[in-house]
Image (cartoon, rainbow, N blue to C red; front, side, top):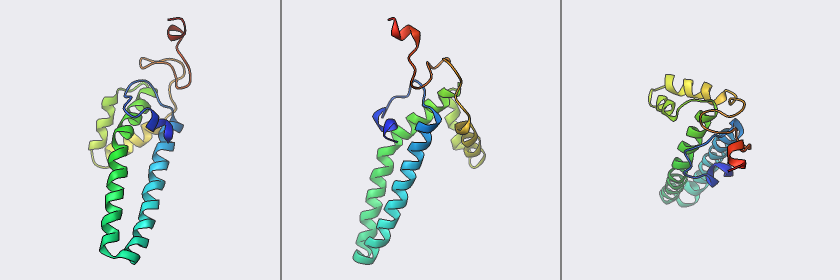
Amino acid sequence: MFRAYRRYADFTGRSNRSEYWFFVLGLLLIVVGLSAVRVILEVLLGDLGSIIDEFGLAVVLLGSAIPGIAVQFRRLHDIDRSAWWGLLGLIPLLGALVLLVLHLLPGTSGPNRFGAPPGETAASEVFA
């Protein structure tokens, strides 16, 4: 999850499945945790607790928007697809299903048009 945040606005290169899915899992755990906090705050503070939690959730989601889009672009690059494929997410249900399948596919082995596989350095970068 943190690797995606370290590459906050890096829309180039590739990200493997584990980087993408750990980001998704981490964000899901944060949202579930905030939902539990919301219940506690509502019991203790009533409507004020709900407002505080909604603000916290908005901060988390807005802060994760750019890294989320970037890691999705890099994941699509890893399977040798253009980031434009991410626009499929705008198509209700069908687009999300297609993107789910694409994100589950293994990355291309060896370098592709978007660079070397994650964790490897292209020979041209080593000798440059």
